[in-house]
Image 1 (cartoon, rainbow, N blue to C red):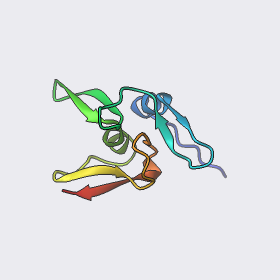
Image 2: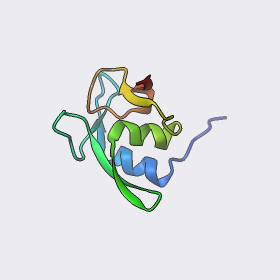
Image 3: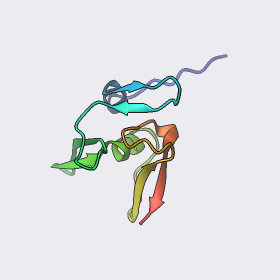
Image 4: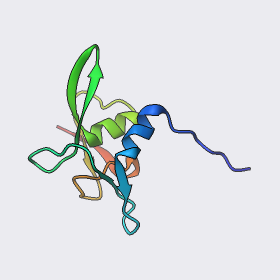
Amino acid sequence: MMVIKMMNERQQQLQGMTHTQSDTGCWIWHGQISNSGYGRIKQVLDKKVVMLSAQAASYQAFISLVPEGHLVKQSCGNRLCINPEHLELMKI
């Protein structure tokens, strides 16, 4: 039996702002891009609008909250990738 996991609204929103590179599997971000070349997105947290990196927003939507003292980085090395399978935590 095949199990199909439905994406929630936030996951759909994030994935909808990407295209998938067939050769790498990277989800390439098409939203706002910072001067350093990383994707970023506005999000409401505790009734405040904050700017998050797109990779952190993807990590939170698909995996879990980002623990304090950690950043999310792309294991593939592509700054615009938000594929949760390519994201990992880095202690700062």
